[in-house]
Length: 163
Image (cartoon, rainbow, N blue to C red; front, side, top):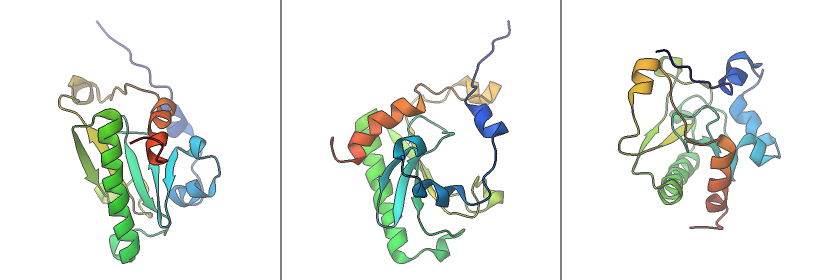
């Protein structure tokens, strides 16, 4: 028996136009945070949901400064990235009962960076048993919630209205 899983939202990424500039520089210039999935804007960084997540609640902490390597960040940028990462893990623990996290920075295309010229830190919530046969056998990840629904759950925590 053959099964078919549909993930039509991925076609927007696969077939969509590639921006000429830097996506991570362009996002905070937009004013509609809901559309861009920006949850928080700090003085030096912003927190945004990953539009193509590894897991439900996958966030990225992004410095406004456009640079490809950690060595190019100021001490203040680095400190705020870590502060916002700590805050993100606290919020994801409270909002989604995350049991663990993968935090990572992919520096360069060889390391798997999708946006190699703008450093950013991934915060991926994890739960015991959140892996199954789908990613291994079918190279397919099953997401339990819509991005917009996840955004609506998270935004009150980042605005200080909860937690």
